[in-house]
Image 1 (cartoon, rainbow, N blue to C red):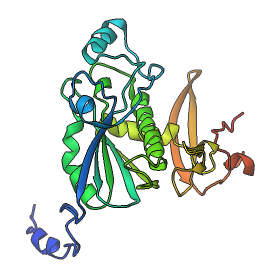
Image 2: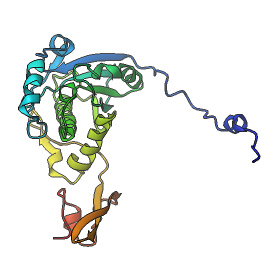
Image 3: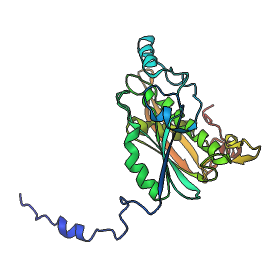
Image 4: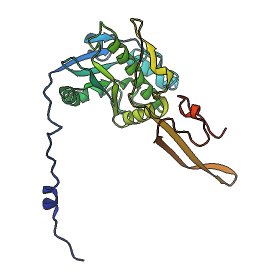
Length: 278
């Protein structure tokens, strides 16, 4: 066997990118604030430093546990799955905006080892470059739970619901400062799975009527993504020994409103899912 001399220094010397370092802070001044319940038993930030107070939400349909697990958790946190808080740490640029909104959520971990403060470095960086970043607190559904990830994704949407209200409310520090047509969801580990679930299970495309709503001052507005899309899902099954076994499932984005071949144009433009085998 003959080994070829390593030429990586020569190759890499021709692969450099002549662009500013994206890891360096931008030029905008960064401000911070905290929103949440204002009654947190374990974190002073979500008790004493809350600027925007939020109402709790009932997540019991999506997050559950046996009594042996649920009771000590409720005792530790001071609330159960029916009263989940909407807590977030915010880094945002000092300016008029509107700025894109980024929500990042941590992964699964020991629920007593709080993960949400760890994204401060990213919040500082992105806010200095013109983004609003929120580190979403979901520590209260971390730990010894299973099958709770739908709840993680749903909580992200509950945060977006608050941001939509703050952006439309004249008394809010974020009034007209949020570009609700440019939203990014990010997550680490189990948080990344939650983001994928939001995209696959919950998120409504531009034809959806649920994007049109009334703001507190009585105006009717339409929010959400500024580019519509259509998802199509195809699944293939095989009969083995009299039983059905799924052998492939494909989820793909197609041109907006494109019918499946079994659908009408109206079906393609609808915001509801359709089983074309029926």
